[in-house]
Amino acid sequence: MSTTLVQPATTDAPILDVLAERWSTRIFDPSTPIDEAALASALEAARWAPSANNSQPWRFIVARRGSEAHAAIVASLVGFNQTWAADAAALVVFATVTSLDGKPLAWAAYDTGQAAAHFTVQAHASGLHTHQMGGFDRAAIAERFGFGEDLAAVTVMAVGALGDIAAAPETLRERELAPRVRRPIGESLIAND
Image (cartoon, rainbow, N blue to C red; front, side, top):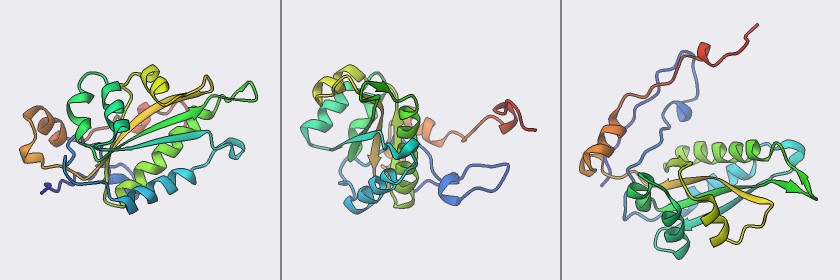
């Protein structure tokens, strides 16, 4: 049974509850299967993300726990990510088409990031928890899943039910229960005329 944890972000301006309440957990329930309806909704939200010229450069690998694909993605993770991400009910690789007809798509990674963001927000609204990772071997993913030169992995997202925070190792609990912080918006603004 998972422990419910809600730590809404302390915001300087009102934002949607689904955004304020979303956080990136590292504690997934290792036995609860993925909620297929919620996963389908998250993928549908990603499908409807905006993209330049409606190019939709994103591609997804969805790997459910117990599958060879899930094991291969776990094996591609580096460092600390391998210690917790295997518990996720699914791992989703977000990849981007980098060129079309030999021409680079300069905006493709940005658009794929938007698809990942839409996925994350919908997943949270549907009761799933997520955590995106940049720490993985992109070449291993490309080789395992047969990527051509025009396809590149951008991020791996762990998806599933929240695990029992009280039963997690202390290092994970500390990270999970730490205050949520962001730098003030003023430090991100280059101009605001």
